[in-house]
Length: 315
Image (cartoon, rainbow, N blue to C red; front, side, top):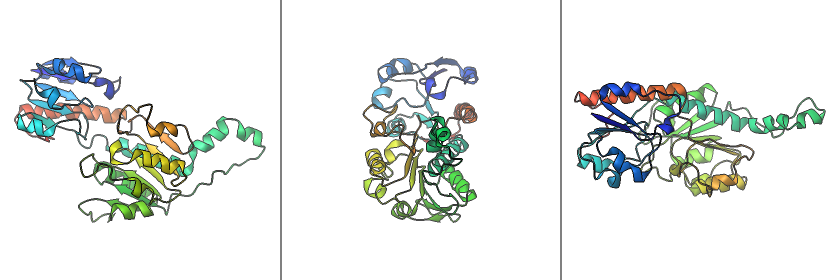
């Protein structure tokens, strides 16, 4: 059996993939362009992929392919209907990055709401030393306890963030299509209007595309912070940047982008390095423990598939 890994560079430089060798011949590529896909997967029985698009154009010439394993929870880079029509199995991985993404979400929220970046720069640039004053309390920051934390999406990650928010003393408002008895569920507009912190934990689907549009972003409180660690296209990126630039929201924490890596003409580049803006390179999922867990889950998915099972099967 031939197993092909197409873009292991996206998984970091510190992982071993030898656990896949007992399934058969393993080919590992650091990165694969769309032009290289057809050649590299032409003899594959199993493909392990993170970000490379597996659309009809890429898959049309493949004859032996039995399974595509996505090293992520989201699978919007896979043409699911094509795979279903041609008998190609698709597996994702769920739950592996919950703690990692929740940790980064909380870190962003605490940093942005407390203006940690501004205070750090005040000391690092020598202004504290030159001030002659023992304390510096500008910009003003507020306690997070007692504030409202809005959460769009209550999957594994959203639920973990909700528990963290509660532990910090926040009132939690949740948007979830099927109400959850453990949390106060409401509509997106109500959350946008009331949240002091708003974090996004949604998969990218036709229903969630641009769900946080310009109208909803402009409904947010002036000091609210907005965090997106899900998919870039679930929100209007330009509207979010303009809201920050115009002082309509208090801060942005962004780890995901509609085009990755972030292009030079992205609206985010206008505010990179500004006060209360945190832009990270789609790393929230990637704590070391999370990535090791992900590879173990992929191994289990392949093993179960070969035994006739449907573990983590999308198709």
